[in-house]
Structure formats: structure tokens, C-alpha cells
Amino acid sequence: MNTRKILAGAALAVAGTLALGGCAAGGGSGQNADGSVTLTLWHNSTTGDGKKYWEDTAAAFEAANPGVTIEIQAVQNEEMDGKLQTALNSGDAPDLFMARGGGKLADIVTAGQAMDLTDKISADAKTALGSSLSAFEIDGKNYGMPVAVLPSGIFTSQDLLTAAGVTAAPKTIAELEAANAKIKATGVAPIAVGAKDAWPAAHWYYNFALRACSKDVLDSAAASRSFDDPCWLKAGEDLQSFLATQPFNDGFLTTAAQQGAGSSAGLLANHQAAMELMGAWDPGVIASLTPDEQPLADLGWFPFPEVSGGDGEPGAMMGGVDGYSCWVNAPAQCTDFLNFLVNKENQEAYAKAFQTLPASSEAEGAVTTPALKSVLEAYAKAPYVSVWLDTLYGQNVGNALNVAVVDMFAGKGSPQGIVDAVNAAASR
Image 1: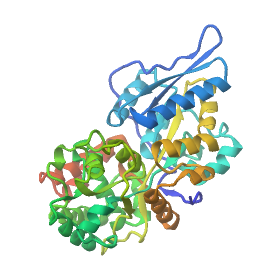
Image 2: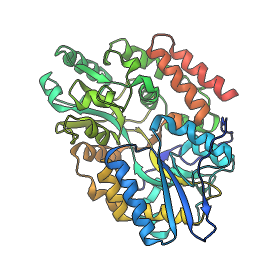
Image 3: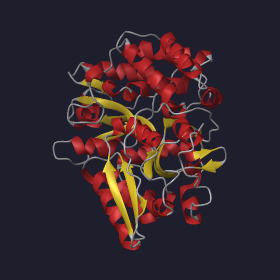
């Protein structure tokens, strides 16, 4: 893994406040009367090997730290942001919570709700994690520990591509459209997308924007949170032209992303669709949805194709870094657990359990899936990797962006509508 790669726009100095509402107990417990310590942990792995990873890792930490107990709560991915915001606002947040950097984390930091970890990260962790730590850097300070690096691209069923006569990975959008036509002729959906969950549809816009906009524009928008460059409109127009070719599965507007055999990941897992645009966590999700709950034997991958006429640098990637932060009032043992999470053994176990890419360069030997090796190769060559736009621009602007993209998918919106929605949200 190229540990020197900088995620574009990840180190932010962003003003703003969380759109927080309601009150609910997050469960931060801290120091108990008998001197013992209870840490609460929220993660988004509700089933399978991922859920077991957290149970096993917590148990190992407890064994190595007598008097410390970790209470785990698995939260469904699509519910995490809202539930976490409510818990943070209540003043009773989980001690350890999932974080993805960018504007979302910057908002939490601005609200004084995340612990400064700058002087609490071990020297060994800093060496192994390299620049992936920068995804959680705000104003020169660190507020999170990365556990996975997640570049995106198009995952494939190689058997379905071969059956359709698609013998080479599409390098341009025109080539992807030609491949889609061949696949459609076989009676299979070319591409699955879970637009019901909004963000998977929005990822298509993100990637078209990555091709249309320069890195400077992406970084500038991370500060302004507004779309004032013509490239944002071009990205929408390019996506609208692609949508006109009808590349997606029937019923994509009501298709979930990762829940069940009928989800977009499930359609690929069960050979009902040939491709899916997704981040590097997808192999593990797909494996959990195959008939035998084993990795998809013919899983392949290729980078998002190039788009003509844009200012993005060829080979640039869209992606993110998953990590964990400590609530500002968490016990000191919270940072001990974060350092424990990223040691070589636990990072290897994470990569295997989630079938994904670890943040630690020391653990990349655990990556054996051919598709993920292809992701690593492209990642190493990429000139830069931009954080997901809804993460980069924060909760309010990100949600407005995602909704506007889905509206265009549904035929109710337009490229200009996406730009207008983002600018309106940024002005509030």
C-alpha cells in the first residue's frame, strides 16, 4: 500500500455545526465506583465475520487490561450518522465511534465533541499508518485512528462479462456503455445500484466530478462547501448522459445497497448483475450474500473509467478511510484501545474479517483477494485520492448533494439542480 498517498481534502479546517436534534442515551460510562472502567463502542458490522471481529478484539483488549470492559453496540450502517449525532448532542455519546474524516468529523471537532489524539497515538502506529492518519487531521491535530483504506471502483462478475463478450476492462465511459449494451443483450442487468440508500447513486456523481474537476477545485470546495466551478455542472451533465443509456438494474430506486440478496451487492453476489460501483469493503459484503456465504469466485475489479473533456487527472480515485474516534469525555483507556486496534495482528485480522484493505502497511500481506490486489495496484499508481464528497463536505451539504443526485436518477432533477441544492445547503 502506498502509505505516502495523501487523500485530497482530508486535512480540513472547516467551520460549521452539526445538525443535531433530539436526545438519546449514547451510553458513555467511563469510570465506575469500584475503579473499573467501561468503554462503549459503536460500529456498523451487524452480522458475520465483521461483528465477530469486534467481539474478539474487545475480548482480547479486556484480557490484556484487567478492570476494563468494552460494551459493544452494532448499528446498521444507514442509521449510524443520525444516531451518532443524536447521542453526541445528548452529551452521552459512545466512548468509541466510527468516523470517516472530512467535513463530517470537522463538524464534530468544531462542536467540541471529539478527543484530540495528536499526542496519544503511539510511535509504532504512526509509522505503520503513514499518511492515512491525515484523513482524521483537523487544523493540524488528529482526531481519529484509521482502520481501513477504501478506494472505490467497479467490482465485477468476470463470468458474466465473459459470457457477454466483454474481454477487457472498460477504460472510458464510452467503452463502459458499449460493454453495458453487450451485457444487457444477455438478459442480465449491466450494473447494480442501491439508490434507495442514496449514497450509492451519489457515488456515480462523485466519480464523474472526480473526472470533471481538478484537485484544486475539489480541495477548494472542501473549504467553501459550494459548487461555484463549471465542472460541477459538467459532472451532472455527464452523469445524465450516462443515465440515458439505462445501465442499471430494474427497480434501482427501491434497491438497497447491502442488505439481503435483493440489494445491489446481492445482485452481483448472485450473478443477477454484472457490475457494481463501490468502495473496497464490497468483497466482504458480496461474500456474505452469496448462496454459500463464501467469496465470489469470479470477482473482478477495474477503476472508474476516464471521461473526456474534464480537468481531473487520469487515474485519480474516489475513496475514503474508515476509522474510529474517541468522544471528548471518554476515559483515557479509549486511546489505548485505538492503538491496540492498529497493531499488526489486529490489522491483519481486520483485513481478513472484512475482506478489505487495512490502513496499516504492515498488514497488507493479509490481502489475498485478486480483486483487492487490483485495487491496491491502482491505488499505488493514483496521483491522488479524494474523500467521498458527502464526507468531505459535511453532513448538511452532503445530504443535500445525495438527495439531489437521487432526484436526477428518478427523472425529477437536473444537473443544475444538483449544483443549486449544494449551494443552497452551503449558504445555510
